[in-house]
Length: 306
Ligand code: HSE
Image (cartoon, rainbow, N blue to C red; front, side, top):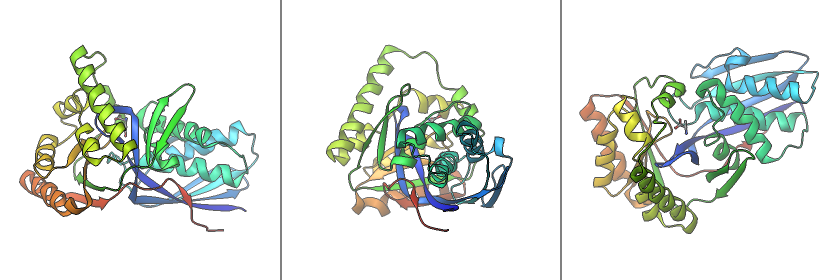
């Protein structure tokens, strides 16, 4: 088979206190990626949101380069990206591309790599946009559901099916700047008290996900280290207002990855209330905003194409 076409989900990372550890795949939005063997070189075409097309500057192109090199593959590939996840949104846009290409290359060249090896390759792509190979977006993009990076070296990913719940994403129309920048403002040292509080939050979230207790998931969506630092640096526009509005309708609210997207989780019957609450915040801030009413979703899947 010489063409592989895959659907690559958006993902939310951190979910509160799980910086670089927690992630969750979403049903929508998603990118479509098609990878085709060609004689040599890497060519990238993009439709939809713009992303770099030079292989070494594109998170997927970089993954393809590394895989061709590591497996001594004497071919090239043509990568077509239908980019529907806005780059720089905090919804794992770069991870979707990197993961989609890793998955497709594995199939295309019959490399028989494990899911964890695919996560490792896709994480390499994240260095292009974030400066470090963080795996908390690529792991859920590949595995689906809720994932925990239990260890980075060696990589150990835990995967759980989240409980049925609604997820509302508000994506304010602001420039975040790069993920690299958003990581530069994260404190390197934290008070013991903040560590203790964040362990409580992270524990509640993980236990809620595993036991299917949505109220625990919501209570766990808090962070007293990274989110406040990013909000203070102006990276999470209106974050406190989103948080307050979400809490008022009984939702859990967190920054989605490094923002500017905000993720709210709520019981299915309250989805409209949360959506209206987020819309109200965007109106009061005078900001254009994009919204997704979605839910936890599966990982990358092949959709045919050749
Ligand atoms: N854990 C990463 C961060 C996710 O917060 O920088 C980036 O999407």
